[in-house]
Image 1 (spheres, rainbow, N blue to C red):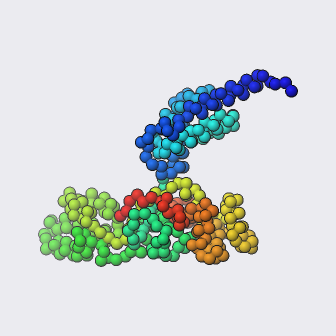
Image 2: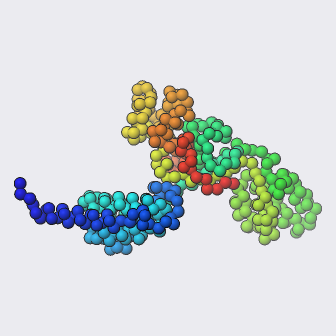
Image 3: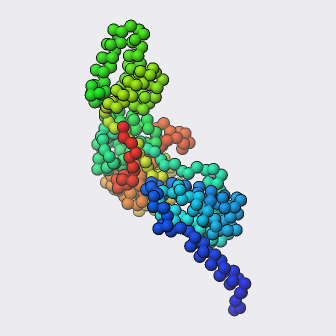
Length: 371
């Protein structure tokens, strides 16, 4: 069979262009060593997408640079993203993936162009998910061995419970820890401080007592479990003397019962969590296969008309409890469960969610702040 020399030459030229393009992508060893630690692969890739989009936009008008000068475009992508990606390995790996995909042919190039259009039109990088946890205990990191020492109900699965809505976590902080004797200002029980100010105000002329009543209002807010930062905002609307009193005498020495935590739940974990409210029939083939392998056939058939949450309950029933069900799911690559909180039910899937992080996954949740 005769060799088509023209097509052979085109193939060789294409291979050489691809080789040069891949060589132009920076390696991990050549990247700046000062990048901060990675928090989320998905977030870095979203940021990388924005950077590549900017690099393409800077290279040529629109996205023509990807087609007409792919080598220069990859270099432009690197310049556009190197300052925002947290982990050098993500930058190098993702750039190589993008370059290889762009050079795979018209379809691959078209897919890359489509992926870049969103960031180029101003789509912001995906934010980390801030979550909150209320507890009677103080700790530096989440520990699955302590599960059950808080609420103990574990109604949506065995694990550590987190909330998108901070008020839900504050409610648990109060409900699980309520002990007014532990609420203090300057080492004194808060009721004693309140009574002292009230007695002083009662003996003052009305003009002088006004400042004391401002202080009493702020203490009442603390007694109603309003967060200190919110009470400080309320103080900012009052007299300068009251603001100074709160900032110097109350806030630094205020103690309360329980602890409130703000934490970072990695996006990639959320994506892999079971959606408790989703119809089981709409689950992935992987989840359905898992259910078929771990539940009786009759139970599996019933699940086809039920929610995914019912599968979790059935696992606990047939596998020896909710803790064992969570372990099975975690071993199958599922880090936890997500579900709409009570205030978001009936809103068509919108609103805020709660999360259950299975034992073995909790160290990936980083505490950002404790109050």
